[in-house]
Image 1 (cartoon, rainbow, N blue to C red):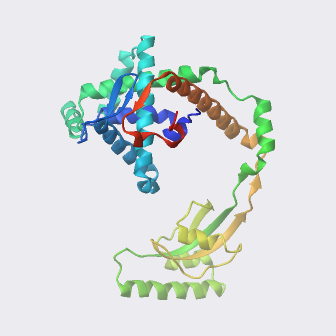
Image 2 (image 1 turned 180 degrees about the horizontal axis):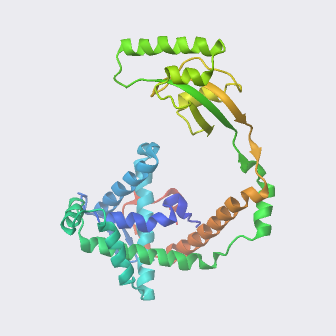
Length: 332
């Protein structure tokens, strides 16, 4: 069975997930056993609590995951928890212990933003944690990081010939995107702006536009009309850098063209496209650093996957709740 950790939880997030979960107070209401890993039970409530942590962490980074299938999330978390349990057992068998000085310094970093120790302890209590549980979670994460470092130690690093071969085979992936530079006259409007304020801004925008297209100096019009004068220069942008409404318009304009009034969440803009650069093929020298970093990461991921596969293959995992079995593992 090929277990790709990235399809379950990012490898580096395995320990981080448990750090958060182990510091949270159990809120689950179902106490029945969900699965048994080498004789050790994981309960429904433990899965529920960790699912909550996982979903919140993912939603903060990827809001679209709010709509993820709930059963699939529970399957992901169940397998991640089983994997973590097996990794913890491996650490114990090696007789490893976290460096107490490093743990203490890490605790101090957590406490640093608080005005006092009492405030720090109160903050932990609000999260259903304590200094002791946080210390334990920090120790666990350090040991997990060390274990993954050992698992990837033999992964090696991509050599020059491998990087160059990858570049030659994937040149289309290494293209600098096109860029555009613009200046704008902006008539800023608050979200609560009244109809009369909006109408007044539209009238002024059309007045400024007529002057601009009539040959008036654009920078002078910025100084005369814009809510944010300076020189009006917005700088260089590639796709994805700007407010969507402005970006859609800017990247359809020709160099030197002046736009009609463009509404956005900020207000109303008149854009002037002042310069542009076409997409450009990156040279190998320009792409080499990114290529090496990516290939090295792939090698480490394969090494972690192989290590995790070995743990799961040697383990006895019994799913009491069969809805937690991931599709590719059913029948295994």
